[in-house]
Length: 221
View 1 (cartoon, rainbow, N blue to C red):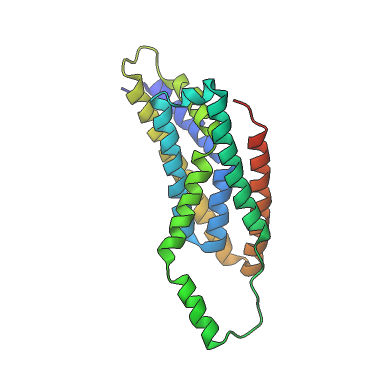
View 2 (view 1 turned 45 degrees about the vertical axis):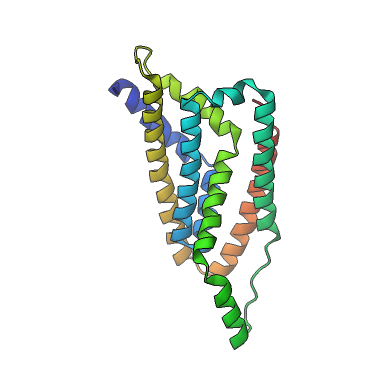
């Protein structure tokens, strides 16, 4: 099914495209730096789930709707902008945790009660990664324009070929994002003043998410 001449350049292109910085990479780095490896991996899984939705939609021709319908594109774009703005301002408005004060027994108990539902926290991280990706219509249009270039004209079942190439893109993307998680956690453990670093990284990430929201708002189909 695969033509090696087409697949090798496709893999190389996928690696280059995944390395380019964007809101997905930023989300993974921010979660890994502030909450550790588990949060980073969950963010990665959420983003790759969003990528899978775009790949299937493009393979079935649904992404063509975004390319031809200004109304559909605008609806998805507005939703994506709103979510990125929410994410960005939430990070920008976050307060620095208090330091240098001994917590009372009651405060420690309350803190533990808040931190107990770890699964819920990871669910929110997963949902954040998923929404960051799936609500970006430019990703859908990217797959619609990029993947078909590597499908030979003589291939009869182009939908299956599209899904197979989409799987390769997801695999290369997952590999690169895992390296981001590992690298970020490695730096997190070795840099001093991690609390302050995480706080200011959150602020920087928040500002970048607002920038990506504005950039998406100015995008056209």
